[in-house]
Each structure stands twice: as structure tokens, then as C-alpha cells.
Image 1 (cartoon, rainbow, N blue to C red):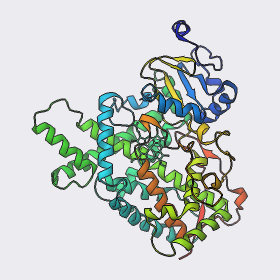
Image 2: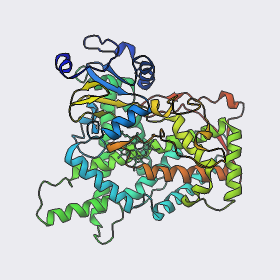
Image 3: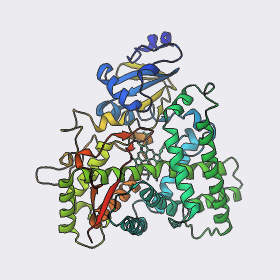
Length: 474
Ligand code: HEM
């Protein structure tokens, strides 16, 4: 209450909330980040908004977000789950969990994803192989305009399949396509305005059909995953783990064999972890890749420069991760794509783990916190041209690549994206290889100016539906 905070320090400022509905009337639920960006102009870098009855402290700007997530990493490092997710995940997995279970699952996932690929040659080879399949799909359109969404989703999902199950699927396999399509559907649904209303007022909006649809979609994917796990279990060989699921099952068996009860390695954690890896690791990466292709179609001169660099440095051979340092311009374009697209605008909700005094404000334990990543990636005091596509943000005057502190598309601190190195590898290989093979242009009759960069709102920001031509260059 305001009494207890008065004892400790000020509440962060913010627009005056109405009873029950809070600041709902001021919020654009289809793009909350946009309203929050506007409010930060008025209320500064730490402010309060009420999403219905729920109090949220918003952190804005590079300095503030970095300070909170890094210097105060423990205080700001808990996850705040959404109501809809509590309906089924019950604190399992890595994305929406906290405490010991989260810590153990996160450590296990990091070690194993590293063993099965992240930062490894084996994974690079898988990405390269997958990219060849994607190229075949793009070629089938013979330069006619098409929507890149489905095929990039399939390709990127297959990378997670390889790491999780140990093998990829054919794009024509209905078991695979239905799973990918459902994953996307559930991500889209969970970003919709009516969903946010359910999260704010669960009792009032429990009857929403969209909630039912979401839960059914998630349940169908779980059922399918359980069946896949059973198959893997039947052929499990502790000497040779094929992927993440095998490693988890082996660890579980070993713990059980040594009589350890109540370990965190149980089926619910396995199911949720695998779901988390698909949810967090597929749509994000494919959306970023699609922004990259859209920017290339929109800015053909920049596409020229990327293709010139690729021709000069690589020629016709396959690009490797090791080539990154000799492709500074292309690398800058990929970074600039992530910066400008800012696809996870409010990160995922955090929560304070204890009472905290931050920049003179008192924030109570258990308060929801949004690190506004867009305000970091578009911070006018950090970026020369915050709202333009300007690869020079990442280049020095000699054209060498430069890292930028305010480049935080994967967030920072304890909850920093677990798949960052995998995502970076995928973006690099997919983007360069596609640009070696294709010239991306708008559909006939559409000028570059007419290509719309307005994002479609949701938990992640994807390009609005559009079609591109991929004209073969090789
Ligand atoms: C969390 C971004 C790809 C797995 C996050 C967060 C962001 C993010 C902003 C939230 C951080 C926070 O709460 O402060 C991205 C972007 C990606 C990407 C932009 C692609 C371009 C991936 C991939 C994987 C992955 C490929 C899977 C291997 C996760 C997981 C978390 C997470 C498991 C939750 C971590 C935790 O709560 O401890 N990601 N991500 N992400 N990401 Fe990613």
C-alpha cells in the first residue's frame, strides 16, 4: 500500500489509476510497448502503470534497464508469470519458473544446448543443412511473390527439433507442420488484446473462447511431445545422447537409480522445457530473419552492399560462422535488423524478489517489472539515428564492426535469453546464405516506399503480412 512505501521511499510516478481498471483507458492493448514509450517521455525512466488492478513498474532507457538487470540482478531477476500460463505450467520449465527448479533447469539447458550445438561445429552444420532445404522452398516460387513466414518458421523450428529430439523433420511431414503451426498459433493468441484482458481479470474473462482455443492448442502439442518422448525412451542409449530429451531422460534415470527423490528432473519439467525451447526459440528467430529480408527489399542499396561484400569475401562457397569477422558490413546489417525491429519490446515480465530501493524509488517485493527493451534499442542518447535503418551504428569510420553497449535485444542479467548464441548463429548463417542465393524485392507493382514497416503487435513484433520476391542469383 502507499502507506508502507511512504515509510521506505517514494513510489515511482505514473498516470493516476482508476479503481479496478487502473490505467486501462490509456493503454493501447494491441501495442502496450508503444503507450509505455510515450509514458516514459512524461514520467521518466522508472514509472508505474496499472494494467487493470495489476501494478507494473516500467524501466526505460539504456542506463536504467542495464543498472536494474545487471547491478540489481538478484532483485529484478525473478519471472512474473501470466495468468494464462499458470493455468497449465504450474511453475515448471525455464521460461516462466523461479527458484531452485528454474536455476537447475536453466543450468541443465545451457550445458546441454552447448553440448548439442550452441557454439559448436555440429550445430553450424545442422543450420547449414537446414538452410539448403529453405533455399529449395524459396526456389520453388520461381521469383513469384510469396509470404516468407511459414517456410522460415519450418526451417528455424527444425533447428530446435535437431537439438531437442536429435533429428529434423521433412517440411511435408504433417506431424511436424501441425506442431509448428500450433506453436505459432499459441504465440499469436497469447499476444492478443483479449488475452491481456484475461490476464488482468481472470475471473471475468474465463469464458473467452480464445482462452479455450489456447489451452487446446497447448494440450495438443503436449500430447504430441509425450508420444515423441515415449519413442525416444524406447531407444534410449545412455552412452550416446541424440539430443536434449535423451540427456534429460538419462539424468532422470540416474537420479532415480541412486535413490534421489524429489529431484527437479521429472516429466512436467521435461514437457515444459521442450515447450519453452520451441516457444522462445522459433518465432523470435524466424521473425528477426524475416525483418532482415524485408529491410533488404526496402533498402536495395544496403542489399547491394551486403551482396557485394559476400561476393568479394566469400564468393560462391558456403558461409561459415568463422567468416563473421571478415563480413563487418553484413554483421552490422544483422545487428541493425535486431536493433530496429526490437522484436521483444517489453522483454518478458520480471518480478522483484525482495523490497528494493532503486534510483530513489521504493519497489515492493513481488512487483511486476517490465524492462522496456525498445527504449534501450531506440534510446536517443545511445543511437545516432534511433528510428532509421542505419547499419553504420555498428561500424567505425574504417568500416570495422563495433560492438555497442546498448545493443540488448536478448535483454541482460540473470534472465538474459538462454538461446542467444544459437540465435546469433542461426541469424548469421540463414541471412548470409539466403542473400548469396537470392535478390529480395517487393512484389511487382509495389514500390520500396510502399513496403510497410509497421509491426504487427503481440508479445513479439513481427512484420505485418507481406509478400516478397526471391529472385535467384546463383
Ligand atoms: C528469454 C530474446 C532466441 C530461449 C528471452 C528474453 C528475450 C529473448 C528478450 C527475455 C529476457 C528477460 O526476461 O529479460 C530472444 C531473441 C531471439 C531469441 C530476440 C532471436 C532472435 C532464442 C532461442 C532460444 C531462446 C533460439 C532457444 C534455444 C530463451 C529462453 C528464455 C529466453 C529459454 C527464458 C530465460 C529465462 O527465463 O531464464 N529471449 N530470444 N531464445 N529465451 Fe530468447
